[in-house]
Length: 370
Image (cartoon, rainbow, N blue to C red; front, side, top):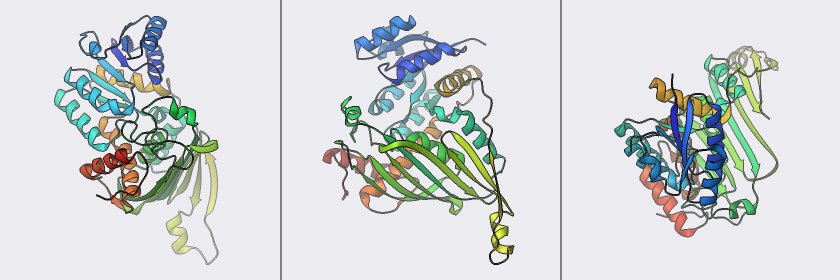
């Protein structure tokens, strides 16, 4: 079938892992890397026997590169993606797709205009257990969806934030736990539910870190069809854990510690409420979902899918439109907290840019008056 050639921008962190995974994917070949840190670029180039540059635009000038993988800090994603698209390169960008939904929109527009593919790295969508959950929901296993919740709790030190000037800032990172760590599971939650959000009310706070952005966030969302959800995320928790629960008419799904269980309910909730005697309750039978069998997981699966999308001329696993959805939820949560009111979806792009611009000026979390 042939190979798709890749160049990688930013190899001081996750970009090195991209290069490693490209070596594991039969359909992919990494040709060159770029990083403003000469030691990082040279190290990866020597390890994987590829060319290296300090100036990433040198990658765009090469005719032997089909795809650019962008693994830089958040504030560079939009600018670089647009430049890559104008150079005729397909773009695979690390999460989050960008800092703001308006930046995401610009990336999608330019990719369409230039006729290139735009994909976003959300490797948890390739997790075998998550794939089993998605299939179960897609086959109607939960029935009509009523409510859900996402809990994502992790831990980050002050040293972690001190490791890069862009970290923990409104202007460069675009937020805290929501847009960096938690966005993986915000993406998963909205993807599994498959419903569009209608409005959100939220609180954010910086409790324990010397940073501008949030280390704790709590939100209540209403999705189309009346589905309600709560989300709470933090970088102040140890032990860490992640839990997603979705209540449907026919079953409850719980994803926790990498495992998924469903409680099948007989009779279904709606019928049980309408027809059961006064103190009767539906019977519940728990079962664990078996993970799907897949050839590749994680970043390798995403990279292989994107390479095949180019070879087969189809959409990648996570398109730019899909990658925008989690950024929009994050922006909605931040805007609700900053304005102190409910925010409707689609998020007002111009208003959010003003809100986050004001937060960047203040360099802290604050109620914003516009």
